[in-house]
Length: 202
Image 1 (tube, rainbow, N blue to C red):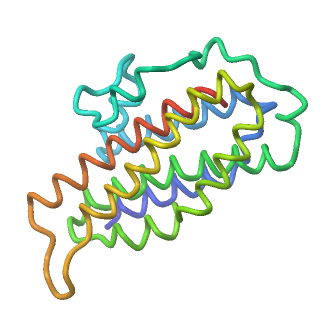
Image 2 (cartoon, helix red, strand yellow; image 1 turned 45 degrees about the vertical axis):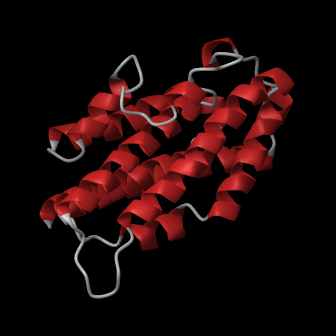
C-alpha cells in the first residue's frame, strides 16, 4: 500500500503542475522525472523503459497505424497563436493528465490485480471528454499534420476501449491472471500511444 500511495502522490504532483505550451521543455523534463521515480521505486518499470526507448514496443497493436505518420513530431510546425489560446493550453494539460492517469492505473493494477480499472478509466478518460481534448489540440496544426495526430488519437481511443473491455469482470468474480495480463498489455500500449501524441505538443 505504501508503494501505491507513492505513485498516487507522484501522479498528483505531475497533474497539478500546468504544462503550458510555452514551457514545453520543462514540461517534458517533469514528465520524464515522474517516469524515473516510477522506475526507481519499482513501480511501472516496464512503462518507464517503454517511454525512454527509441522505438515502439513490438507488441503495440496499432504499430501499423502509428507508423504511417504524414508529418513527424519533430518536423511539425506549430501555430504559435493557437498555442497561446486558453482552449489549447487547457487541452495540453488534459493530455498530460491522461498520460499520468494511465501510468497511475498501471501502477495500481501492478499493486492489486483486482484494482477497479474500469472505474478509473471512465473517470479519467471519458470518451466525449477525450474527443473534445483531441479536437482542441488539433487547432495547433495544419491539415497535413492533423493526419498524423488524428491517427494517433484514433488509436488511443480504441486502446481506451480495449483497456476497459479487458479489465471488466462479472460482479462478484475475480480478475483471472490471463485477464490481468491482457489488461496490463493494453495499458502499456495506451502509454505508448500517449507518448507518441505527447511528442507533438511537449
